[in-house]
Image (cartoon, rainbow, N blue to C red; front, side, top):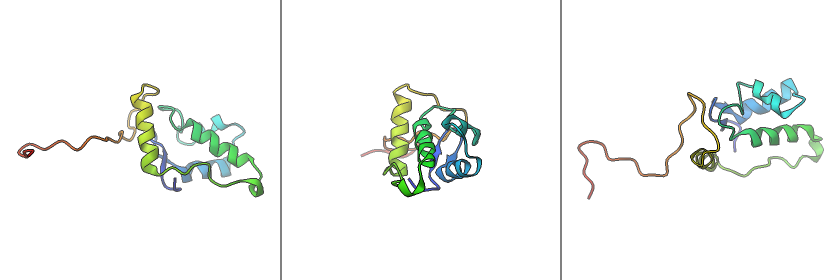
Length: 113
């Protein structure tokens, strides 16, 4: 995941914003990251990532192994969609829509072969 990729799809919060919030506000608990625009309070998908970023911030920088994930933004979005579709969470109103794996429907007037 890149810094400008969205972590919290429900409230449109990027990884950069979350990491800056942790750096500036120094939350004492991972749950306090929710003060960053409501991150983690919608469908719940991003909570484990917020906990990871918090844990990384608590480690000595010299001992940090860097990022804990090798996901692309597209993989992250697909995994979140699977989480939602499996009934594990409900996106907040205004959340980014789930990606679809289905081909786009033909618009009126187009015919399939």
